[in-house]
Length: 395
Ligand code: NIG
Ligand code: FE
Picture 1 (cartoon, rainbow, N blue to C red):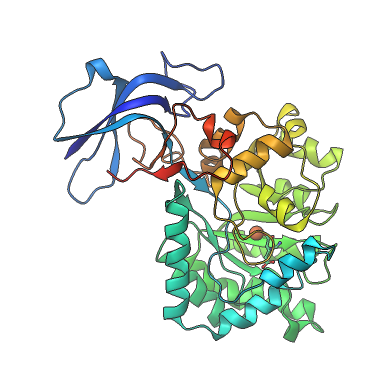
Picture 2: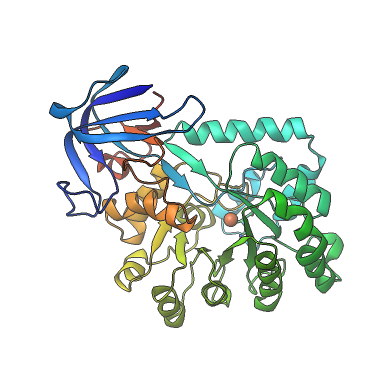
């Protein structure tokens, strides 16, 4: 069945190769365009079938008039921690009056999550996914990391796998309190038995590489976990350079990670390593907002040739926001990105950080994962801050 979408004031394709489009901001914009979406067979995914000027749109089974709104690829939120129970709002409030963050609060969430049943975790998770979808997000990556024992990590990944293909094993989130006196033993467990049990439910492995936190992992510990993940057939992602300078970024680049996330504290050598690599720097400005940390200089990174994506990091500790439009606004206001760069970072570049070409772009053959902005231009996303003008398109 084919559906024709009309009444599009601005079609932001994020396709730099689209001829005849406005490519001045690398957004591949078409005005007065139409799009046809449909599934080839009843059980195949709905994809983009046709894009072009509205006046030459083909016939379709149904049509849908957006009445002058903006259409763009659905957001790709490439970093989240949605499988958790419990509440840490008091920790946030304490930070706003001067408390620091060192990852110690993660243990509180681990305790609450271990105690929650599958049913409880599933309903919390689906509510969070619904919240994301209602704000334009159509793909989400979800990490484990609040289980930190073999059966719990597998249980959380299994639940995450029910709602997304993009699941990440984060047994190397922190050293849990019961292993505090045997860090090496915990690293061996994560890299060995836990990795083997988790790998069937995960596409990626991640580690919180942060020598500045007593709870997280050193460069050598992180390397052992990441290399074991690679041997198990998983792609690599890294939490790096969040709380201070350290080895995370260079380790990620050296091992060929798809993404290194946070990048709050970078040296010139880190920037140089990133700029010559295929590793995407995924910035998480909601974390700087919610931990009162300095924002990374996205402008300098982009000017140095680094590929920059944006994600929420939605989690109970450092950023409890599911809003990609807010991340775009923060990136523009606080990190020097243009609105166009921020929109690309939240769609096509975020897809690149997941090594996906079928999402994050509106091109014939890609998935019909679309978001609609109730405004004449994408510029309204950061302009109308805090106003819910972006939604996932349900056709
Ligand atoms: O990405 N930095 C490590 N992990 C999360 C925070 C998790 C938490 O505090 O619960 C992050 O910021
Ligand atoms: Fe995170």
